[in-house]
Image 1 (cartoon, rainbow, N blue to C red):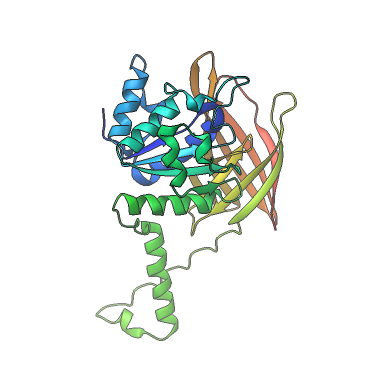
Image 2: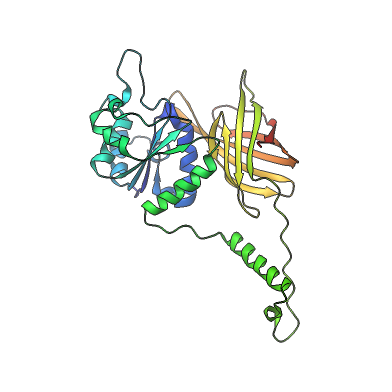
Length: 311
């Protein structure tokens, strides 16, 4: 089994959407081979419990995703977390026993469970500082989480991208030329051509909200988007069924933006990844979107909706 450094612990019927979005974001920053999520990293025929135990043992940081149903309440029975055979119980107990760093992530307003609600092997989890993640703070939370993980793994902050460095160099050249720094252009032969100014970035950054009607009965959702970045780069999050997903392949276009997100669909024990492709045209404080879902367990027609800027 490949080496792992970041283990994502979650309960599927509590936070599967967040887990997938988190995995995509962390894989982009740290590499997919350093982040473990059960859906992608357990092959057919492998013993689930053995792979989980091995992955926890190879990890340095365990992210514990805690949503409203994390305890696994059951009518007339103790919660699933109290069962020593529960996989979430096993993951956290194993991480605590090995002295690993645990980072609880509180989702959608969930609170840290009181120690009395946790089974004895897991009560030490309640003493760990948690981070809160919701659709309204997703992009900022991801930046803070990535920075925290780099610190825990003993890594320096990622350097600026080539695009950003080139933008800084070009900006410095323009400022120098404007201040009369003729020494930049000294030398034999003809003077170098001036660096063309970069086109202004469209006013995309910030929070947006849309009412979306999907193509199945009664599927009316309020979705939230949060965009950030510099130059022609685009990062942030887009919710699907009210769960935020990290943006992939984000880029700015002359009149708008495009990106994709991914979700995991489950039916009859089968899990399939669906890709959602968004293309938006900016018009003032509105973005007119067309979203097409590819893959998944069923086919879908393109969805059109309008996102409006949140003051």
